[in-house]
Length: 321
Image (cartoon, rainbow, N blue to C red; front, side, top):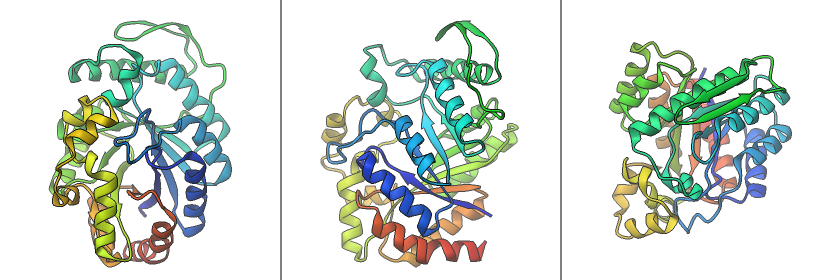
């Protein structure tokens, strides 16, 4: 049975309101939750960027849901610090936390003042970070000299069972590469043929563990309202790599998205006032074999979406499954 999660968007919603939203999502019937770890929003219109790790501790305590976070170790974060964060949440909330690791975006990482590396260097750096994090979670003392440096690090507080380290990917090639090291795969909604190709590449390369999908949706009682909401909040998020990886500030994203057409937003967000259409879209993803689907309503107000999907969408998907 597919798990349906609530995606908590730190880039768009104040952390206090986001905590209220995720507790409401649990009451409405969502099975799990996840978020992404950002320093900067994608647009000044989004206007928030709370610290995911502080929020996760509060959210895990306030609910009985399982949670995941997408994080990029290696530049903004030293991998030993991420191992400590993962280990502490895993120890406090056994079996309820996982972390997805990716190569990151300049909009979050440039703040260190360090040079933003090429994609191949970022991938190599992430691979080193994964090895460091795994070794620390296993109780080893770690020293390492490479793209990241570690000196005699040891985690004194660890969970009995290390949380899963999931690979984050948007391309077929990255999905195949994640199979070398990841405990699962996470990606975002895309055409079904592309998602199928990614899943096949991951599995054929020996990839293990669950498949996670984050789905951007925009729903409102009226179609024009759903379209306007998506256009206001998510038109700065339509750019494929490497553009989305390499732009540095919310102002840059706003500048390049000034003339984005509405139809372009509809290519990356499932926009409809028709809840039945959302059921159809999500059923296609279920049939691809995703184990967890996290729904991200791109609006800043979450209650109407949570109530509507909890009452009308999730029950139909579970019945169909």
